Image (tube, rainbow, N blue to C red; front, side, top):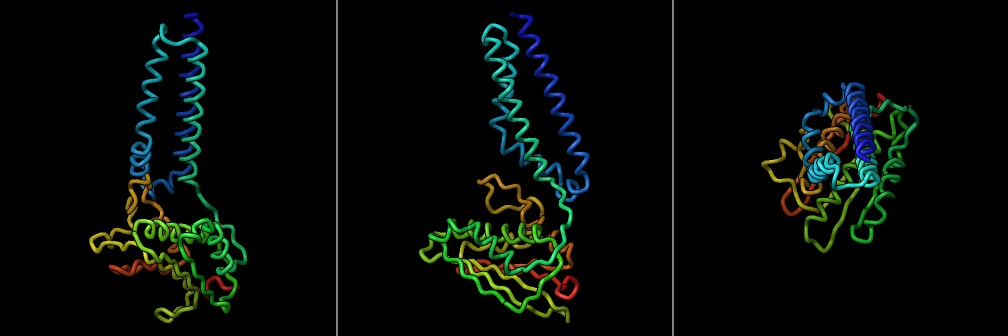
Length: 261
């Protein structure tokens, strides 16, 4: 029985080494983007988010080393549960540092927004979402998935801001149009909410990596940081205004002629 227990622990150690190697492989594979996001900062958020599970992990390791308290079957179950936990966290880190390659195609920005809004259909009984689309906006050749991620993040932030404010009439207004800034035409997406405003003292840090207005939800604070990076990659702009008692409005602008089909 003692031999079987030692074998189980050795197998667990080998699995742990393999998982550590897998983590290191993923870290090297996504080095470029991890530098952009700040790997150490993301790991801090990761460790904070899962600190209770990690404490429990340590307790289980202690239990495994105590031959008198657990049967081999119980130890195997602990090993399997912890291996599953590690695999899930590896997948989570892969998703955080996922490198996205442009999948260019003819994209209708209005349709992209409509598709994202559908994902928030469950909130529409609580929040009124109004959409006004400029139907003259042409198709553009751009990665629709990346733009969809940005739109989703902006709407999700608006929903969070509204939920934090005890207000009877809750609304999000989404508008698209074509604007000219410094003699350059842009497709502009405006997402306006009447939720809690962004405090003046935080306005300068909103787009910084690590900023989050919802730390209690375990957010890593990379949403707006990454969103601005995506839009900047296309030569666009992401900005906002926020007023006490009125809420926040985000403006996403993509250069029209550069990507027009």
